[in-house]
Image 1 (tube, rainbow, N blue to C red):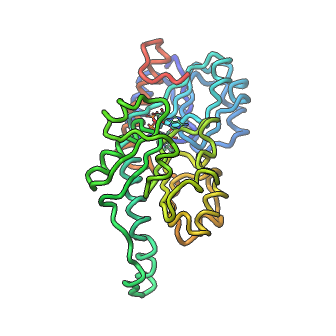
Image 2: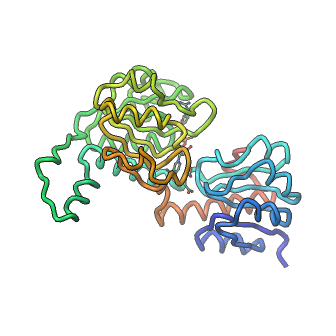
Image 3: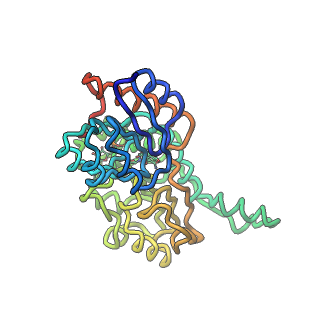
Length: 313
Ligand SMILES: NC(=O)C1=CN([C@@H]2O[C@H](COP(=O)(O)OP(=O)(O)OC[C@H]3O[C@@H](n4cnc5c(N)ncnc54)[C@H](O)[C@@H]3O)[C@@H](O)[C@H]2O)C=CC1
Ligand SMILES: O=C(O)CCC(=O)C(=O)O
């Protein structure tokens, strides 16, 4: 009989489940409702989530045996870290697993917004040949502003440099010489807004970063700027973005993430100059395989009281 019980509420790739099963009993309750989670979480020593499950103070209060919450992925904005600390529950994530996938999707969104690829495809499928309408622009020699020069921001910067873009980096938590070492030209927030042809967001959602791209920020950007975001919807004021798209200040936006998910068919989602994907930055078999391996290994280490690599709280 296994000593520990692990609850999965957002699924996990088989390779991760196999690692967990070597040390614990695993219950896969993918898609469980918030109310049902409160009923059963008290039975478990560990909880592994992705972004869907909200690990609220109520969950921690009900989770009498919980020792560790594992986030298969990076962002922990769905986990109440203060409540975790108060409940003496460790929180771990798997921050290295999905970097490449998110960076590649970001490049895809960037190419989509400069060449209007999804709309060109849609018109072909309507039997049309609108060649003249689809005059886009190149990435070559354009300035890319990367907000958040961490793992994903740097991976995007490296890929953008292969397209011979000039890369500005804004990250107040990283010294300017380190941004330079990582391949970016350090910029203040206002410099980045003023100089970039494309701005891409790679920051966590925190009280500081919420609504960072707001009406004031859009006013400081170049006319016809393009915005890409595969971080969190909340870092952009979506009403301000919609207004900037309607006035032409922003020529196009590529969005993988939304303030409310799923957003439904909002004016932003249905805007002709917005390319949307349903939060799939990390949704590749490679990234999910790595995330499952890393989070399962880390959760087992936490249960065994071993040294942790990715302790968030
Ligand atoms: N679309 C998707 O499926 C995915 C989205 N993400 C999002 O991407 C974010 C970034 O991930 P990583 O690059 O791995 O994290 P990271 O921690 O390596 O990099 C984030 C960077 O943002 C900087 N930062 C924090 N607050 C800032 C602020 N207010 N202004 C400017 N810079 C700020 C930090 O100093 C750090 O260097 C995650 O927090 C998550 O929200 C991550 C994985 C998948
Ligand atoms: O796990 C997911 O559904 C999305 C990944 C993500 O956004 C993250 O890891 O921060």
